[in-house]
Length: 232
Image (cartoon, rainbow, N blue to C red; front, top):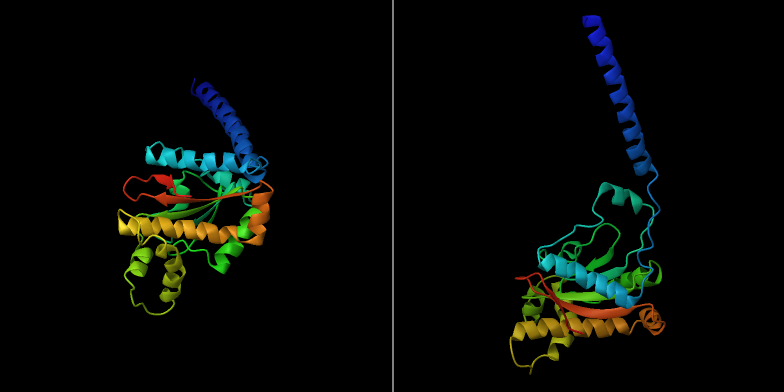
């Protein structure tokens, strides 16, 4: 009897191992030969903006889907990227682009610098993101209570290269001086608008806009709610 039981168990074990082998082979083939990456930026600028804002709406409503964050997705985009949007955001640690827009690997081409300013290096990066990689929308994201903007308003005396950041922010906030309401909020939004206009002066980006292949917009992030509102 014990011999019969042993043989039965052996047969069951063999069948299980065979099934596991098939499953492992399937998973392995997917990892090493992942599905062809979808051309996710083969959309219009308006569709790209809508997709971006819908992601932020999910985040703000605590309904994140966490898309494209699996290991399979990592492998899928390892050889090439086709981001549908570019973000010029502040370096502030509380404003991580992929999280606040509920996106994942390969979705966003992100540049971050204190004060979300369009320096020559940032402009060049964004030109590459749109002209070469095909991003259809660029959003400059400023945020509530931005320290760099606040320091610029106060005329802070700062060491090292920090002053170059404040100098780049100053022209934009000059336009908000006589506006009613919260001084810092107005300045943060005015800085976003100024950086949007600066980006639009890029011949590369201007040509893409003229060809209806790109849209450049500004957004303002509320640190308390997680919500993005359009400012330009």
